[in-house]
Image 1 (cartoon, one colour):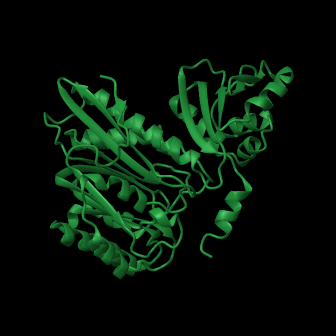
Image 2: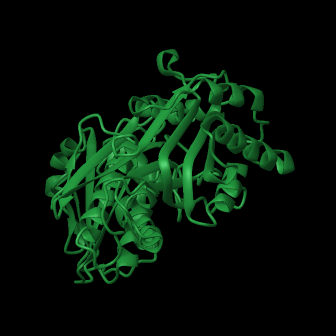
Image 3: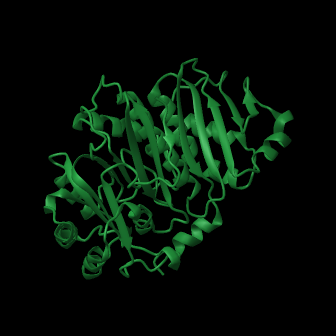
Length: 406
């Protein structure tokens, strides 16, 4: 019942989904070769749908409209644009988001409430609705259009993030696909960057909602780029059910394998988001062990990976283990100062209440890598553990964000 990643997989790999993307002149930056800024994802039939959204109180109009459209936990399509986030635009923003849904519905032959909406880009700028409409009309969704959809959601991203996994249970094959965007303004809390998941598995709505939150809290919500939570964060999951069979709920033979497949997919997307952080050179992975509780493990891991001092420590390849201890200590997680230990890429840096000075040269050498894995045992002799992902902090991050709108 193990899952396997599908080569070149994405949101249209599961049965029943088509997508597409085009350039409508909204986004002014990005690689001209793949500069798309309007995308459509559509299912052949009504889907069980669930989502998580930003906890930022300045939230985008598309978040408000999508929450409303998900009241019956059904959806058929998602329309998205990049280049303008449609945030902080008052009543006009809400109407523009509804107009996006309406335009997509008319183009696809659906009802407006069957369409979810997402936007990403500059905040507090009016959405160029005429261009969005033109973009929607230009898209002809297809199974092959998943890549174009993934291109259309990008802003400062340097690479496309998309994956699909497949597994079998009881003679049936199930597939989960996904794509995400985000390089900055990523410090989720019960939310994520823009992420779109699909599956052909038939799922119960309650089980899907629980599973999405459980997975997000252990993958996408363990991501940090820069301590800022976006106004537009949205994580959507559509289930077409086209693989057939009874709805998957707790106790179904496919429930655990599907949960694990969604988790594996989201973890891969999270790693790619962290690796592609604005100005980043290094992926940072923080693993916390020996925690008293699951909450303590996640709290400590996320605090460490979010620390600007830990990030710059990695940037400079400087084995300043004290910064890791500082972050663990301020996280609020219970820890033992006598038993806590820290290692970096497998090299012991701190144990038994003292810095492992004999390993300083080896620590420095180990950090000269594309990935830096920090492992912290809190010494509470518990079995709880967690992993968080982030990236180093470079001068390029400052330049990218200093010049974002100019």
